[in-house]
Image (cartoon, rainbow, N blue to C red):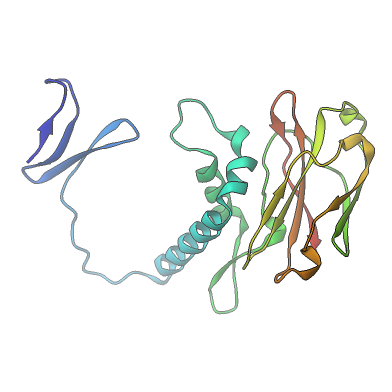
Length: 211
């Protein structure tokens, strides 16, 4: 049974006749009955399903980081949020296939932060006990103290971490105390980006390797 809400101009929800109606992100959607498929999926369709599963799982495992890293890429009035933008990027640009046609995330192609600012030209990272040492080439355009370094440690098969505003870009280096990292149970792929804390903008992240 369908329900007409808020009078004749209101949305309809439920089933009437052969069609069903529901609300999705504030829009009234009406769909006809699904047709049963008789042909088996193609190889390309099977691979695409695998890619969707891998991208969805990886994005979900790192949702908090991607919600932060893509927050300034969303548009007002659009139904696609930061997480969906990150998931789309992973699916379209960061996945590759191994020799057995199984998809995997290529960490060198992954953007953890996204935005219009010019990324750092260079960044070197090393791990010394429980201290992460970072060194980069300062950029004259980022001489103001509002430009901060942000850092993500992504474990492809383990936990991940986000550190924000850890140093001013103009300083060119910093050391971050990270208790317990010397006993980590997985490799961390390191990504850094620039955050304009005044205007609310990021640069794209750059990949700094593994610690």
